[in-house]
Amino acid sequence: MGRWPIDRDVMRMVAAGMLLGLATLLVFPLLALGQAGGGEAVATLPPEPGASAAPATPQPQTWDQSQTLRVLVGEGQVEEMTMEEYLWRVVAAEMPASFEPQALRAQAVCARTYSLWKMEAHAHQDQGADICADSGCCQAYIDPQKAAANWGDNAQSYTEKIAQAVSDTAGQVMTYDGKPIQAVFFSSSTAATEDAQAVWGNSLPYLVSVSSPEGEEVPNYYSTVTLTQEEVEKLVKEAYPDADLSGDPAGWLSGMTLTASGRVGTMKVGGVELSGGAVRTLFSLRSACFQVTCQEGKFTFSVTGYGHGVGMSQYGANAMAAQGSSWEDILKHYYTGVEIEMKSEKG
Picture (cartoon, rainbow, N blue to C red):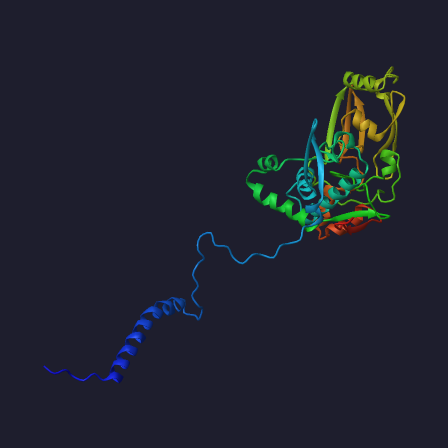
């Protein structure tokens, strides 16, 4: 049988049509996927598991992250950590995490500044440390796990809030004449803070009495301590054996003088003249702002505020923050004449 002649042009057209059809089948699902939302967005597929995006630009370390210090956390136990890690633990221990963000930032700068001042004193050099975790010597300190347990349901938000306060003030330090100041602080004040001279006998130009806005909204702002005649006699005789506690107990405590801020400046206890701070310590009072009465063999101390009264009042800082003050405003109010400087890698 004969064969039909093959037309080469026809064959080319058939082949081209088949290729076009195949391409349409492959492309159409992608086009449909891209138009499913009704817009013009191009479809993108999620990355494979474990695939990483383009590497982020490395962020330079802050001074807090590059500065390390050795913390005496227990008897003979020294831990090395960054300043950032240490400050988180101090702020979490020293100030309620529920406080205003600007108050927490002010506290972070106080803690950083006080740390540097304390480190320059080399108080713990013999123990192989730069600073300790004892609030009676340096600053209060708490481990993150313990802080989280104390905060309960607020642990995550409070943890981040304090970390933000430390981060937002990274490297910021208060100075006077170019040196870190003794940035002491306390819980709550009367209407005014106290002059360092009245409490410790040393005058510092940046630790003078200033107004403080907190008041009766502070928990335990007013407190009372009641001691029997026997308890007072025991405490006084143990601390001051030469004190004369003969005669009417109502005369054992006398000769009270007040400072300009309204705290007890001096008082005679059994004839021994003590500072208001010494009387506060002797009878475990919350502050040196107190009045005392003696009736029916009992001494009653009526106390206002909490702490030594020098430097920044924490509740006052929170009140200022609630009224719109920045952390810089707060610090420059409580520490007279200071500058706020950024620490650098070299200094």
